[in-house]
Length: 257
Image (cartoon, rainbow, N blue to C red; front, side):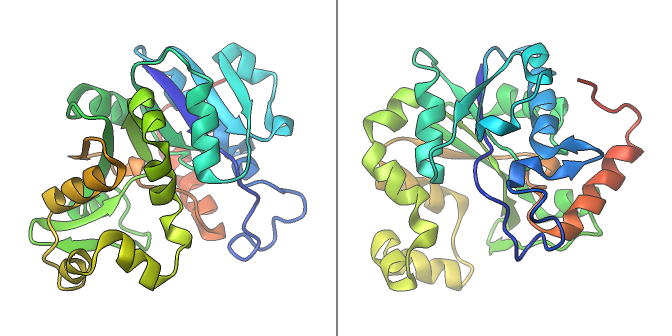
């Protein structure tokens, strides 16, 4: 299994007030004295099944420790879609790729191995976590859940994909990845009013989402309910830094470079 870590993007000043201008990039946010992205690299390298690691980020974030971790830099190009494509194209012969966000410092070997062992066979697999598993692991953090007839879930910042399938249908993949920038009416046109009404009235099921996404990007997409909440524990605001540092400090053994 090869890995792409998406760690591009400048620091969101409004979410991390006090860190600028010393920390220009989100991936460089310090977690226990180490850039946040390095925690993700260490977790990925700890998995025996992981082969190559490509980190899509700013060249100035590369450190000597990356060589020991056998992680290779891919210069970031701007958008999330562009960065994903750059990472996938840096692994031209990869059959399946694990994609990780660079702001997941709590991700563990156990969480990644569980996903790799149990994820369904599909072109794209998107893990999600049920509310009780999230609150059991991280009860003191604020969360947003989507209510469905099957339960309440939150999405992760992780995915599995077959690069060839994505690249062959890249126009649709790019449209979907950039959908968050669209206006509500444009989103409605993309997903369809019936789909959005189901979402609004909490009648949307996981299989509905799988079918819609598969139709939109013309490939097979599946969800995977993971019991590991750390797949969804991204650092997206200043208060999250102290929170994840407390969790890491409480673990029996800290990952070492």
